[in-house]
Every structure is written in structure tokens, then in C-alpha cells.
Length: 236
Image 1 (cartoon, helix red, strand yellow):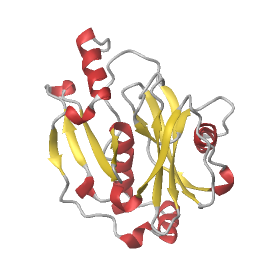
Image 2 (image 1 turned 45 degrees about the horizontal axis):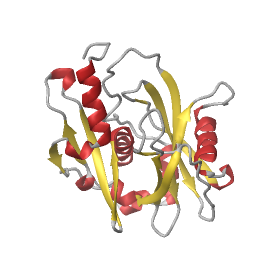
Image 3 (image 1 turned 90 degrees about the horizontal axis):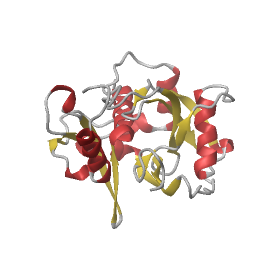
Image 4 (image 1 turned 135 degrees about the vertical axis):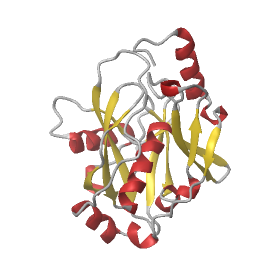
């Protein structure tokens, strides 16, 4: 795709952001095995990050549609230690300038005052949803993921002890909810979408729709891509 987007390309991407469900599914589920429950325990997760395996991330970047200076960002991948481990996710506020209304991890730009990407992820989690660092144990980070909006995102994976109380920043977050880690780490729940086109125009992404009672939580795009990489890391 060219470095400067045409109006048609911008409109196409805007449509996808508004309704990603309308983009065809080219693969439903996967023949890959789910991560075993024994690998999702606190001890196993700590051991995996302490002694990481040799592995290859499946998704590292999305196609860029316009020239924009890349920016470093960090997100927190919070695994809440309930009876079954849960992943805390947010729904971005509709007035956000990028990825508005999408399901996301708490996170944002790395500021000059942040000591490192983990510090940035913790700060953003506090600012966006009021998740205190007192409840958080950082395990480590996954490889960066570059978004279509030119953010180079480092996913910081952490364990979160229950007992916290969230306070959402309404200018950034419309909702916060939890999805079972086992659901997200089962490729049977992963869908691969592809836009029509050839070469770089044939944009692909994953989705992991989760039925939360009567409400569907539509996990897709960068968030689903980073979760797919977490799957690859844990299954390696």
C-alpha cells in the first residue's frame, strides 16, 4: 500500500473500524491445541516468563496506510487471579482519536518520564481504569506489535490479585470487563478475517468474539493479535 492513503483507502479502514464483523472470515477456529489448564496456573505463568522458550510471534505489525512518525506505546495485559484466570479488558471511549470504541488493553504512549515500558503500562492502567500497582505483579513483556496507526506497542503481561476497585476515566474508557484466559488461549475461538484485495491491500486480522451474558465482547485487531502472540508464547 502506498505511504499516503487515498480517500478510498481511508474510508475503507474507517468502515472496518466501525463494523469489523462485516469483513469476511477466512478461517473459523483452528486445528492448533488449546493451552492446557496446567499451563495457566500462577506457578506455570511465572515459570514460563522466568525461562522463556524459543518461539516466534505470529503477528508483528499491521499495514501502515499513511506517513506518520512511529510512537512507542505500552499496554498492560492483566491476568486477574480469580477461581479461573481472567483477562481484564476495556472498551475505548467513542471520542478517542484512535481505535475509538474498540476492545483494548489498558495502555497508551510511553512518556519521557516513564522509567521503562512496564512503568508506562502501569501508569496507563492507573490513569485509565484506576488499577493500582499494589495489586500487580509484572511477569514480563512480549515482542512489540506495530498498529495501523503507527504505534509500536509493547504488551506487558502481569498477574493481578483480586480485591481491586476500578475507577474508569470516562474520556478514555467506556467500560471494563473480564474474559476467561482459557477462552482466549484456545484457537478454536480465534477467527481470521481478510479484506478483499491483493498483496498489501489484503489486510488480515484475528477476532475472538466472547459472549458475556447477553452482550458480545468483540475482541479483534491489535488486541486479538497480541493475544494470539501470547498463545504462541505459552504453547511453544
